[in-house]
Image (cartoon, rainbow, N blue to C red):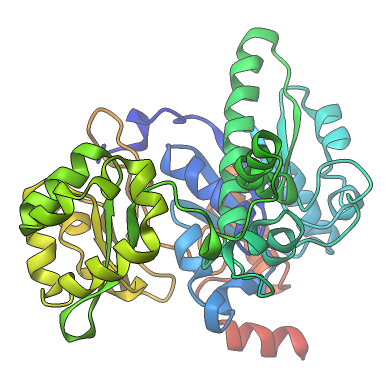
Length: 410
């Protein structure tokens, strides 16, 4: 990992992030990993994403690294004035709040560009401009609308993907838009207003199935019932009830598979000569292969597939990835100090720059961790900062969330 953000491609770019949940924070995290100075503006009580339960409990720690925290009351004139001073120092402003909210605070693109024509503004929305643009959207909502849930579950049982795929991808497309706008700004001197849409992201994920229909004239069935394009491309239950995913997707891989396991009779069977014939024979071929593989352990099959260069995968649970040898030995997981002072390991961006992974450069910020330092940078005196802290206009990071809530309520 580069030892300083000065060696990273977005070094010198300041991003002010107004966001919560996943889509906006993902965008800010990627920009931060690439070296941008990302400042997360959150309420004095903290972004509610910090304390979500259940399946959302990991959102904050996953998507908010390499950021500073300014916790401020935007409904206070003093707080809003401080935020306006901050955005005047920014190259990029990004937000993922409901339509009209940023305009209420004079933080919409028209207001920002009037103050700074070089500003790049990104709004991460449920829908791009059109009939749906005022609807409220969530990842699961757009998965249902765009056909992804239909394609994932069996007929009659639409099923969302097991991750916030559209939120994460929507944030990625936001980064692409920002980088394109920054490149254009180099040539024109002017910023741009960008939008990234959650629904449109999911439509792109479903595009291959739309074109499948356009090519074949037949409605694509859900994936659990799809017509297989490959003869062996499935999950198998093997010895001791273990499961493993196996693939043999070409004639060369089929020959390798049969030779590795000594299935000479299958290799010689004319009904299995060629991928197309094998796909048509899956109804009887796969049960026979399942019967034969049931005598092998998952470890034995893995070793044979690994040795022969055949595609396979253990059926892992997310918690097992902490012990994945490839992630650990390749540097794909990195330690980070959490917002509560503990430590966890997080997956890094799935890319290298000159062979280097882009890791955490700072701890996850407690609520308002950099508030005082940022105000001082903006020209506030120590007395002014202390007044704003005492009035609750900005959060004091030394004050715990519970104590802060009790003080503000009194």
